[in-house]
Length: 406
Image 1 (cartoon, rainbow, N blue to C red):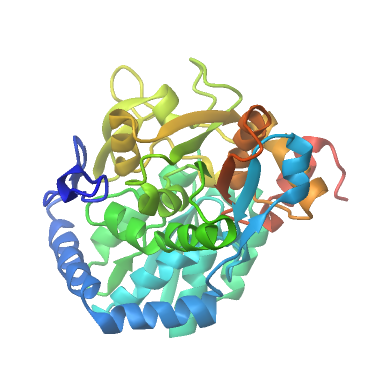
Image 2 (image 1 turned 180 degrees about the vertical axis):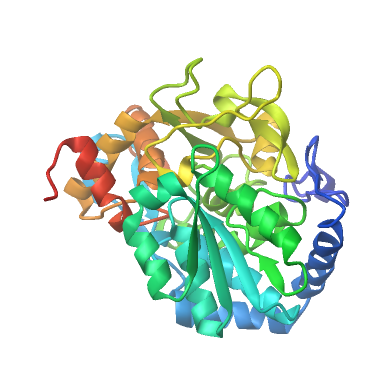
């Protein structure tokens, strides 16, 4: 793996493709904006002052590095592998999203943009975007599916407190896919002053690679912290996947470590079945084009995008980032599905054993840890990404568990 040409970390190519996935399928109106963004990001990547500003804000504003935590009671309860959590839920705003938002908004300021738009599902990317916009005095507009607005009221209120305009999207099923559609329409209409801050490793090139690069701080820290804690790398790393930014952030720095098993966990909803009551696009979908890139999608025989389903608003997306699609096809990473019921059980176990209230997104990853850890030896090390905290989800969880919140 020392040979650069055998590395899994060299993509995308000059056309923005990871194998047959990725690229940029956008209107002629958007192409100049995409090319300008690519040029500006390529410049920023080699600019020491850009990364100096990022490092300063990651440390003093976000609170990085996030801890690597040995979940002793959980490990003992499961009775097998040693489980560590990369605790990105302790970041400012309560999730991994701000790692990427900082980078994009610093880039937007360099480009002279004064209006930031974003899409959001669970609301964490919207909150992070509103937060950084407030810090820098930028106008912020967040598109959020009407269904997600209802089930994520705490985050809607947080965004409004931070000065953002939250626009409910009523088209489709009113979830993340529909919010992204409307954000793209806004961008086309307001090309001069607007920057689109995408929250995941999807969209047209250069977004998948750019978001990955900003989120890779998670995996870089985890490698260093694991070496300090255990003197070696973990045997298995696990993260939940909607579009896939928290997972790619953890996975990317480990891709060339061939002895590290990589597992992504999709939202299995009510079960991966023909009714498509899930959001497991790699498990139950096929390649197609959506939101400017080619990747695995939930679609019918005519190529129409189907509405996915998940208890988790942040995983409720009928596609996945193109780099994940590529890693799936070449076999470097494994992808599995976890049901709503399994995620709820993991949510409760984490609360009871570790005093950590997880978001529903990482609860999916933890549910797969619960499946595999008991059958692994005690010297097997699992590192999972605890990518978000569960404040936003307590009303949803209470409803599904039959609690009356009054």
